[in-house]
Amino acid sequence: MEPIDVTVNGLARRSAAGPNTSLLDWLRGEGLTGAKEGCAEGECGACAVLVARPDGPDRTRWTAVNSCLPPAPAFDGGEIVTSEGLGTAAGAAAEELHPVQREMADRGGSQCGYCTPGFVCAMAAEYYRPERRAGGGAGEPEPHHGPNGFDLHALSGNLCRCTGYRPIRDAAYALGDPAADDPLAARSAAAPPAARPTHSAAGGSEFLRPATLGELLDRLEQQPDALLIAGGTDLGVERNLRHSRPPLILGVDRLDELRGLHEGAGFVEIGAALTLSEIERGLDGRIPLLGRLFPQFASRLIRNSATLGGNLGTASPIGDAAPVLLALDATLVLASKRGEREVALADYFTGYRRSVREPGEIIRAVRIPLPLAARTAFHKVSKRRFDDISSVAVAFAARYDGGLVTDVRIGLGGVAATPIRARSAEEALAGKEPTREAAAAAAAAMAGEGTPLDDHRASARYRTAMLEQAMLRFCAESLPDPEAAR
Image 1: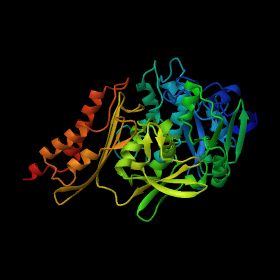
Image 2 (image 1 turned 90 degrees about the vertical axis):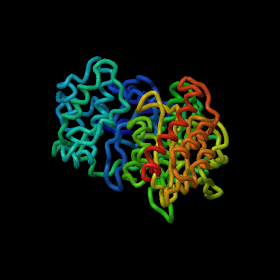
Image 3 (image 1 turned 45 degrees about the vertical axis):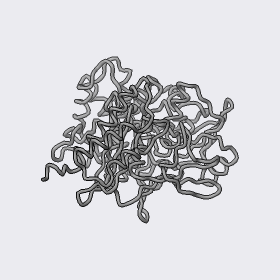
Image 4 (image 1 turned 180 degrees about the horizontal axis):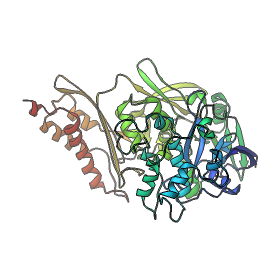
């Protein structure tokens, strides 16, 4: 196994890491045992650590990620802070606590302590978030925001089974701003470590992070069955729980060609390797339907690593991004050695976890056409409000003019072998005045969409009922009631 070089808690470390060694296992092998393995699938947050990530061209953002999921070689050349190094990395003496750790201790936020290192790292990422510091304490706090600007959603991927969340929330809301001489805060003003090509091979598997898109496509042409990863949030689960060991893993997370976000001629283009958190910050509410998706997509810890390219690349029928992008009439830019082509997302899925992507082809970007429909909604039905897999996901985008619904697109997830457009329901509503009778007819059409199944998340009957209710709710909440206006 080739060694990797990682700066951890301010100190350079160099040791071997195989393609199937998680970042968590590598850190624990280095004697840094604060981060724990709880669920091994990115749900509990006990494994959270801080990673130095780009924040614009020349700044760093301390970002909390699940270390149990990504392969360690993906962090070659990177910079990490763990819970045991947080205090000293922030300038405290060895026996002193970081402000986050101190508030957790003072307010009884830890009992057995198993989850505490992950909570501390997730809380520290929010502590250093520049937008929190800029707006902390100003005006009325937003829902789930403390008076200091702390966003509790930063902890949505961290689970505690003994202390309870009230003292943890109290600790979060008690945090002030970082001190003027805090080294981690000062580190944010400089660029993160530059990405560098990386290679690791062991046990019949190989990890490669190519230097350029051209190099990636060359290798993919030679080995079209290679697995592409950015954040590793899907690969990590497959490795940890199903013992998947792909022969070749190609890391695409730092390729500039896959990380753009810009407005073109009639569309917004989003790079396939941008994380969902980066997209959320970059769009800043410009696409409201995506803004409704982000808080309900897994947790902040997952969104800090997950990408649209990965979510669509798996072709999963329950990926939450697909219904929203279907409603937005998105297209995908597919790239290979043969060049690029643009494919409508509605034509992309061909079967369960299958798509039109050809051997050697990758998703380079997602394009969302402009102008956007003004009336949108996203309804996710799951057993938990946050950090859960959908039983049903429904996204709406409609245009309303002159008293009529002139155009409507509806994306569905969890009700068929692929994400689908609700074509019959769209036809039942388009061109109609949104009366209660029209809404009822559209809801009846919606109930017949897809081929829902019984499984451990929901019954087919329940899924069908949720489709019908989603349409009625959309018509009631997002479209004018012509009868009330008469």
